[in-house]
Length: 314
Image (cartoon, rainbow, N blue to C red; front, side, top):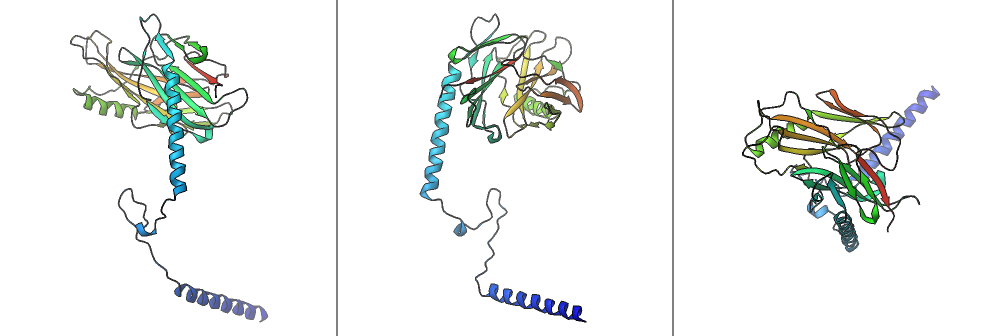
């Protein structure tokens, strides 16, 4: 009987507290804010938004100024670099603006850009230039990652005298099976190229055998700019684009090149190649079947088709 009495008393206490709570809430002005379904709106009424303070504006201005200065310093560095396809009569041409800009706080960088050099309408090399936030004494505030995208050997020379010579061609082109009949216009072929890129997936695996799926960025980082040929030779490059694949944010880990090549007999042929800048194992699949792979490598100062090094200048 005592137990039942205790339970009843406890129940009445909860009810009393609830009633008092509701009474207290009813004495306050309780307003439901209108929620908008329009794209891009926050769902909070304008009069309820917190106005930015002068300090907020100063912070944004300072950040914008800092990143503008980083971009100036990055541009200065890549303009001083010299990239050349072996036996070419002149250096490759630097694209005036970065192919993409990204950051990845988990990798300690505060700003990063990807730059490209062209020769004969083809992108033959790219370089990630990364400003680091924190670094060890043996590192530095600037990290370079240069990757060859050339079907021939490439030599590179960077500021402060650092040089790199690829040990083999940067890419190996392979036929894409079941490719569509190429469109007649640039717009049609770009749509086809995007559809072809969506058929590729990739996975990295580190030393601890931990695997991660890469994410294909939907827009190409580069569309080939090629002169029209009235009488192209067999194998000539007709069109193409390059797509980035990322693990963290938009930081490019691997690149997928999709190209259209002329064939003297039959219709033009769609081909692909893979490039990367990672020490981890990498597996790339087309329609679920592995078509390209590389193993984990011990991290030396340079690799066969790409190079990574620190610049310790502040």
